[in-house]
Image 1 (cartoon, rainbow, N blue to C red):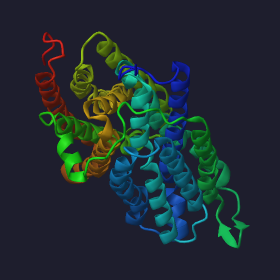
Image 2: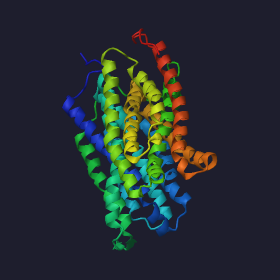
Image 3: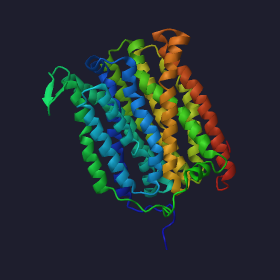
Image 4: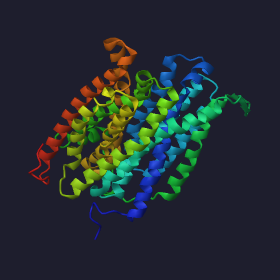
Length: 441
């Protein structure tokens, strides 16, 4: 007799080992993604770039291909080896990050960054689908939350470790390699990129492709896939909208919090970046673990709507917390408020991913994960960094108003996000009679 659909296929120790290895890969992806943010000044000087050209390296060159190529990769995830897709993606983005260190022109650097985005687009859709087959639904939110810790550890490592490496490299003279003249600071790309090739090899050697909950069979057509994602009652689309709007706050904070500390509390850039990096590495993982454990606890107690309930609750609780750090009178209280901010900000990340994996049928899990990531990046990257800047420039008209701009952006985005999560929660309950009837939003 085959095991029940939610039965784990491997020992818990091995399954959690896979989570740990995938989290390491996720850490490397965010280090490689964000290390460029430390190099704005030397990039502008060496390649004679404008702010717009630098912003394209940090944003469009990466995000455009990361978001759009995630969709066909997501469809590939539903019928091919997810282990191989992950290993290939890690190897590609690591190699392309290292090649950024050898770029001799803006065009070469731009296309190397495109390659980083293409490689990173392979990781999360495959990882979400893979872990959904390693863990029963009563453990999936925790597993995906632990995997998602890589976001904040990688961001923190980029700011902290990358900053220290850059301080060491900047005074060194340019070097010659393979006929190329390479400024010392540019070797930072090589130093952070090449170790990822070892991670790719470990994924390929150690991760076993688990048996899918259902046979792969024929993958639905693209039109059929879109249609089935909306069943039942458009729950997926409401959940997607809520998550994308929530991500606006995350990208806005990730972009502007160091600058906020510089402008409002007069911290040097290096010190501001290190405080934000340290908070990301300590506070945000706590929030991820708390959110995942709470969602899994409620699920194990028979609440089939636990993940929807938690997403809605986090969005509501997060509204007043956004007011806290901007109202603090001094730096220590501001940093304490930011720690609370990051705990709550991160608590729904893994839960949302787990809700999507449970909501859609197994043949669509990779594609659904890619659609979720596309929405989060398309909406979050386009609005999160830009709206606070527009408010600062054209509404408040002051550099010192950045805190108010961030808070106003967050309040509007979170209000809309909470509304979308509430609709998704209610519609899920209405279409799922197994949910406890006493639990009604």
